[in-house]
Image (cartoon, rainbow, N blue to C red; front, side, top):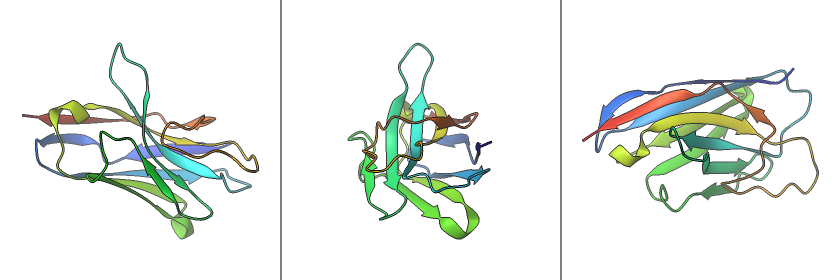
Length: 126
């Protein structure tokens, strides 16, 4: 069973930084695409950033380009999201996600994830 466990959320003032981590376990294959989504109550879940796990290509939503960095540590089976210059509008529940084991999977920020973590809250105050 695939498990994704996020950590690193919290409260920060505008302009601050946070780093989210996602520990993956239960994998018997390599997911071709992993990423981060966020959601606020009453709105659809938004793809924030994704990474092609094989080649390392990264993809970002326009709203976070230049401020967020997605990365992976394959040795630790861990995905990261480094967030800088945080804004109040970044406040949301952040979810780690992974794609199914499909060849030629289309990886982009809003990719079709199969596996989800439980979420970690990020709150940015002005």
